[in-house]
Image 1 (cartoon, rainbow, N blue to C red):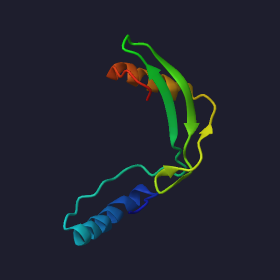
Image 2 (tube, rainbow, N blue to C red; image 1 turned 60 degrees about the vertical axis):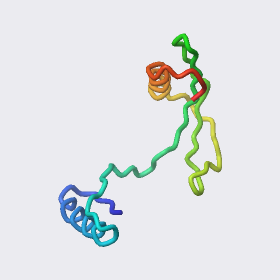
Image 3 (cartoon, one colour; image 1 turned 120 degrees about the vertical axis):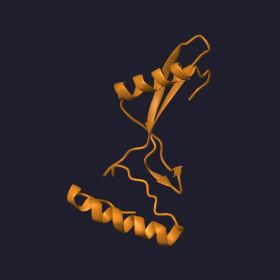
Length: 99
């Protein structure tokens, strides 16, 4: 795994990473994604019914984790765009439960 901060260093870093993957796994394919310096794990709770209604119940920051388990859940201020999108997605999927 490598973090590349400059576009000019990407080709060399990719070549090194592909070679490491080939040696370690017999396959040079790698996955590239944007590096986030301070990511947050935010959960949005939404309740939906079979009639297309959905409401936001709350949100929490679950960023403090150990072994993929949240250690602390902190309620946080409303994030309107994130909440609207969560409600929209649940309505689109026609889910009838709490997500």
